[in-house]
Image 1 (tube, rainbow, N blue to C red):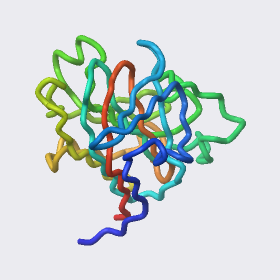
Image 2 (cartoon, helix red, strand yellow):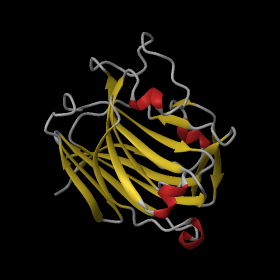
Image 3 (cartoon, rainbow, N blue to C red):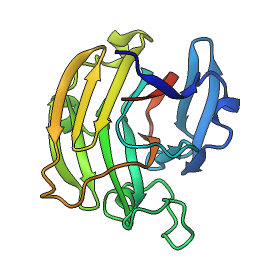
Length: 216
């Protein structure tokens, strides 16, 4: 079935981030094969970067990801709004600077999937991809992480896919389905339309390209 493309970004140069909202010290540089993103700060200076578009519910988000230096962690926020369903950039909301508690237990409602979870020793010992619902930091789904460490990835790209279809979320890497989750509302109202954003935990260095959002 053909799905309608509603957003596309090649993520090849820093100019492709024009209009994106950066929270925390993001460094973006051009590589021969994509856009290198890392922290411009120290070991505890993490960042989040929001796409300028607001997306409807019932979408499929895809992008290509290549880890280049670890440790660290990569994440996608999606369906992000204020608690009341308004915009996350409403000036009445608290200022965010990239610190994780501001996102998982602050004044925004969102789903977020973390993958390439290699920041801490226990994450590197047992690789998983985690889906959380916020506010409240609820771990609602988990699957195995098939991504290799940087030394074995050898700058290869992996195609990551998130499907958000009302109460259902699917997460896959290179067409390998890693988990499916149905929201039964036990952790709060359904997440619907909203913004998407990339997050990295320092000192991860990763390369991104070919972000696309299709309507289902």
